[in-house]
Length: 233
Image 1 (cartoon, helix red, strand yellow):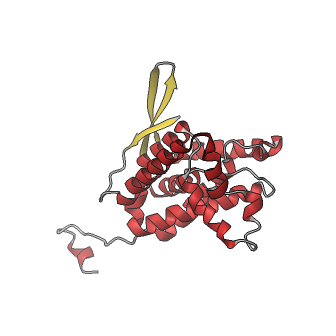
Image 2: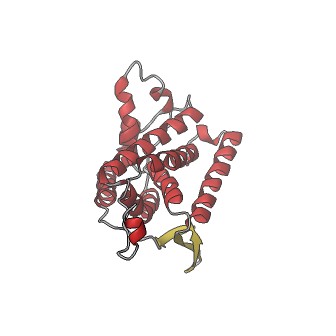
Image 3: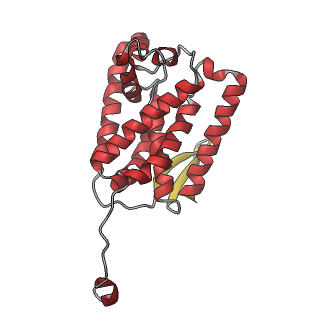
């Protein structure tokens, strides 16, 4: 399923969301210049679990929890992530405010990297991508707008089948699919040989569900002019 849009309006321009998209694209263009040697970037700036748990020997390795969020392994990887961020990020930013949204995004991505490392503590495979942080955005979006309508598309050969679902259903189904895939990866040992970082998605989503409401802005209450009773209480 591919998200194509949603029905939730916003109050302000999503500067941080669009800036994050631009930065991710810029970094990806730099990656393309490296060609096959891009692996060097991944190993230096990606989250490598076995190295992360040795942070007491080299505390700078903790920075990879943030740098890894801006690296992507290919066109499909970055396009998919940026579509999700484009559709869901603006509304979450609207609810949190620009500064807290950026903090929320980076914390979600960092803790998502920790979640993946916890499940694969001896892995030497770099974990990269914005999907952990974006999973946090999805978790917050589901909490903030459970009844918001999300337009989803299913590619069928040369056609695209479109339908609308409540956000709680669309994103709830997404989370369940990630969880089941994560369990399957654990059972088969796929977590140790690379592929999708399912537990980063799961961890990021849970962080979003918990942290999003804690950082949500308190908005002033407005009353209609004729509501005299409530205006004076």
